[in-house]
Amino acid sequence: MSSLLKGRVVFVTGADGFIGSHLTQRLIEDGAKVHVFLKKGANHTRLKDVVSRLAVWEGDIRNFRKVVSCLKKIKPAFIYHLAALRNAARQPELIEEMMDVNVRGTVSLLTAALEALPRLKCFINTGTCEEYGNGPVPFRERQRETPVSPYSASKVAATYYGQMMFSSFGLPVMTLRPFLTYGPQQDKDMFIPALIAHCLERRDFPMTEGDQTREFNYVSDVVDAFICAARRFGICLGEVINVGNGREYTIFDVAQKVVKLVGNPISLLKGAIPKRAGEAIRFFSDNKKAHILLRWRPRVGLDEGLKKTIAWYRKNRGDHAGI
Image (cartoon, rainbow, N blue to C red):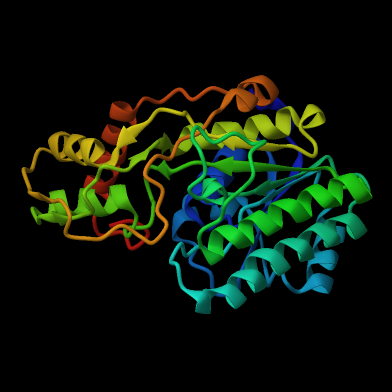
């Protein structure tokens, strides 16, 4: 699938994050020459198995001249931009920071690529399914975004800057919008790893009523889509593409499934936590565009993905990158 990337120079931001670390490991396995751009003092725990095979650059993507200098030295064929500040809280005090990191940082990297890389094949920007907010489902790329948090609004702005850089200046950009993703090494405050931790420790789990629906994508499927984006970049430039399986489950049904698979019976405390302001009740993707343009289809079913995830957390309960 990914022979195109063998021997290619690839630049990755956010490689220390959940999806970014899995993508970086996959790129190394596929024979790419991977350069990662990390904040000074970033936690490399998720990259510990591959860090010796990476070129690590430290800096702040908002530092335009630093980024230009770095890109001119590396001369990557592909850029994967996953670095972002993520906090879905509905708090106005987050607005300035989200704009600074997620918008200004992305614009800095986009304009640096425009100046430094005239032969760049593709800049693959990472959006988020949260850009759709509480719009009508299934979410389709052509519908208007309805962000409900400073985070989702900042990601919408970054997406539009990417499209403008393509249409006005010819920078080869596309944006992928991953839907809810889970798997090994996810932050322990996220729904599935938090629930697994409670099950392993035999602690009851406080949650909302759980009637909201979501889709759950195993991380290797999402990484496959990112690899397909590089392989198929020629027909995807300027596009926004959903990355999701489109399979709708209620939160409560998935919680019950996790408890059953772990095998330690605990109580799910429905209604102990209120829903967030503006939270969507139904939330899942239309992925026809990914099928057509990326020739990508998810391969890992929910039961299989949960079993793999649970096995990893059982083995790594003391790892501060997970439980």
